Each structure stands twice: as structure tokens, then as C-alpha cells.
Length: 188
Image 1 (cartoon, rainbow, N blue to C red):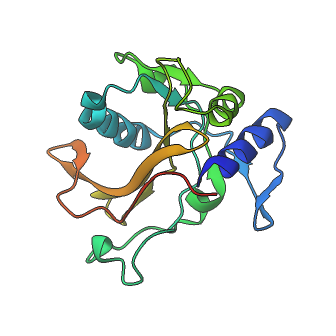
Image 2 (spheres, rainbow, N blue to C red):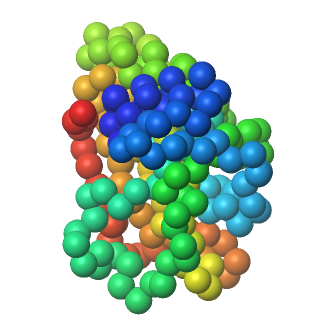
């Protein structure tokens, strides 16, 4: 997902309807809150990546997708994922429960759209980038979780990856497996 898709996500949220956002698939904003286990995965990710000094987080997740994965998906070797259909078509609103104890500002989809419209090279805004997290897909035993993150910072700026996280001693952390997919730069 790149700039045009983030803008579309923002427009869908602002319209507060399940619009056809891409490929005639309906985007569903979940009414159910995130489970404690989903929140734990997000917190584990944020704890691990807090050294990157991002201070803005999108208040809405994005759909999970398998874009950029090698055909054989070596990062998932030996992992039996649960049904990913909900994560492929659903997004959640993130609230204060995700930022608790962290210096993060939640950015609305309309604010994210504004950020994506600007040119990062000429911007003087010190809060240029926004971290965006995908829905989480668990394995059948909930030992592994797959999560996509994107750091977007303007109309020609962004990077991200899809990572496997692993539950070790009751805490979610980044797995030693290689990233499933990664990108640098922006392409529409």
C-alpha cells in the first residue's frame, strides 16, 4: 500500500462507509475492539522499534496483504497461518490503549492524507512521518504473528516491511526469520 491507497483509506474513513477501496473489495472497519493478543503484538512491535524515534502512529490499521512476498513465502516456512480472510478485508481503529506509556500521537486518516500530499523534501515539519500498522495474522498455535508496517512521510517518501513476530516467554518480539517483504521509497 502506498500513497494513493493511504489517501483512499482516509477518504473511506471520513465517509464512514464500507466503500469499495480496491479491487471491488469492501473495506470493513471492525466494530469489535482489538483482542488483548492483537494489542500485545502491536505493543511488542512498538517496543522493539521505539529506537527509531517515530512519534506519530496512524489511528487506523491497514489491511494485511501478501504483496511483495516471494512465491514460496520462505519467511513462513513451517508456520500454519490461521484463516487470514478477516485481516485481508478488515481494519481497526487504534485508541489510547496502544499508546499507553509511549510518546506517540495518533494520526487520523484525514491527517495522514494531508501528510501524504506534502513534499517531504521542502517540508519544515519535524513530525514528518507516520507509522502505519497492518492487521495481524496469527498462526494456528498463536506462537507466531505476521504484521506489516509502513513508515510514510510524504508523496515521495516511505519504507516498510512485513515481519514475523514470535511469542517468547509470553512476550511478542521480532522473530529471527528474515522479513517476508520489504520496500523503500514510494510507488503508486
